[in-house]
Image (tube, rainbow, N blue to C red; front, side, top):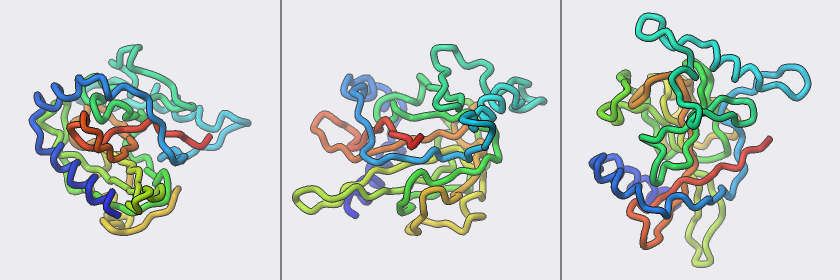
Length: 236
């Protein structure tokens, strides 16, 4: 599982990086080449059955009508998002963030889903990172270290030299304590479709949502981070 160890070390080096340096490195054109995931993933959210093929229409309605916080700001999950950053993905309202979906995170997906929604493992794998003790959040990059998240490594085979190859899914903005409620910790194996947490505001955010991303390690000489995000292939 060398790929898992390498990825975890690289992620920690990013977390310690100054944001100005991160933005400078994220301006490199290499990040905007489209690379799809090897694995096919399940959506990391519940499928709400409705009539015929419209079983996910509920999630769009939820985003359009769910009030984020009546006392702080009475807007819905889609309010305030520019039209060029809001898009539909197979029945979910999603958003792009020009501030954080850059560089090795350019292919991240923000599912606009209310807090309290169950989060499921998108594929079989091993938990390599799990943080759920944070209770702070806010619309400022100073909150980025207050993030609750889980990372799951998924085996995709070996190189000709016999080294393990993995893709890693990451689930961010989780409710405090919701990983422990599921009895999960680093090193445990989870199955596709198994509940791993619930959505909850934490870290750098201004609204309820699940930030989902697929990574691979990438030791190309031009990659200053050693990992990059992939365009996930979802099972329809």
